[in-house]
Amino acid sequence: MVRKNDTARISSLEASKPPLDDEVYNLWVQIHRVVDLIVRARERELSRYGIPIRQVATLFAVHAFGGDATLTRLAQFLERRPHTVSSILTRMEKDGLVKKTNDLARRNIIHVELTEKGRDAYRHTTRRESINAIMGELAFDEQQRLKRLLDRLEARARVELRRRG
Image (cartoon, rainbow, N blue to C red; front, side):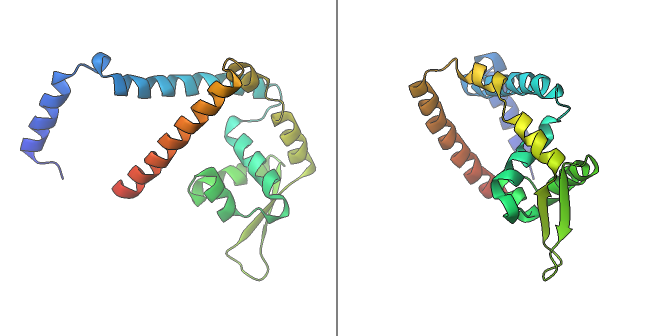
């Protein structure tokens, strides 16, 4: 709970540093802008195949897990809540991309597999021209450095989530 004095103190801190002069915040905004632009380019590329971008990572994960894909494993891999992945899978099942089955021994486990249509959609998603063109702007050593930096930010974000969770 934020007290009145804390609100005044926070307001004065925010007022002392205009948003455009806050380099850390500007970097965060720029990261979002770049991600949004890459996502839009990828969405445009995927639209040729009628594959929503929300389903691409799920197709990849189901394919990667092979016969061992379960709702729980997918949610963990995708860093999403199980109910979010469940709704994506429900839509994908309606679209004929995946088949969900309940585990006979343990009813709370849902197995997921790609259908033939899903395997075909997955093959389309492996054509990553937009991503390759954008990421190709960086030399290999720059890509490796960026990956190390993003790994550090991801690790710190996980710490913050646990701390504030």
